Image 1: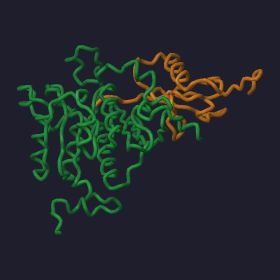
Image 2 (image 1 turned 120 degrees about the vertical axis):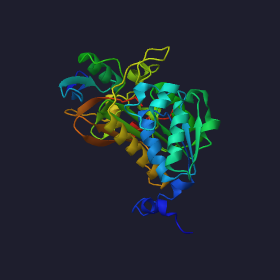
Image 3 (image 1 turned 180 degrees about the horizontal axis):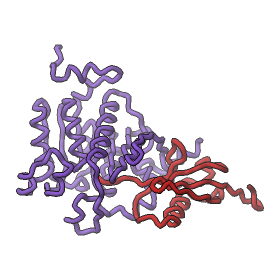
Image 4 (image 1 turned 45 degrees about the vertical axis):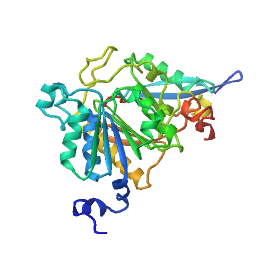
Length: 85
Length: 260
């Protein structure tokens, strides 16, 4: 979808812990970190380390939606990063 | 040369030449639940040298998950590195086992460059970042492992190829970078979170980590690979980790994601 000159991408964000998911509209320039932060806030998740993946690829938080190759209809999954030993 | 029958079954494994590992000097950083599992597996491979690095002491709360420690170790406050080294030394006296009671963050690249491979079993992000950066700098393969309840993670870092641990770190990590994910929830002057720990997940994650070490030694390691275990669904998945454009260890290079 294009709004004005800004391309909007609709993605599904899934919470691997609860199984819940939500739809999110993002721009090509949106950072993956913003998606991650929004999801953590949306589900009121605890202050912890999280990763975000799309299929078999771990997304780099510093990349944008466009750079990550995210497309309309893609599902990204938020998962806790186990840091205990 | 006649192979020692002790290793006959290991060396006859098809598809993976495990003889190289016998010439390796390996350092395992962290001798907690995960470290115990990794140390047991690695010492059975029979490497040339195996160093156990940990500055903590054994506590009673460790005994539920750390099979290398005894009640006496906890009662006398024995150092984890010493207790673990003694136990694995008994498992295989072919291996030169060394214990080092130090904080990994006090050691630099000169220390880590003395090993053929390092396995990280630490309980905090700051130590992981430190060990990863030093190993990456001196070109030593690093296999990082982490556990939390029913979740396990293993990441393979083979410098200079592919991503490193720091490439996976984002702002959520930095918000808890100084927290230790301890099994006791105390003994620190910084806030620490009591991490749930499940023995089977520790065992499984430690085994995956050890197997990745064996694969690297056999020349079959895959840089930039992360294994994710979800014990709730009993599922194991492998994901590709790309080099991050903001990772200090990789300089200011372009994010490999951009190439997709």
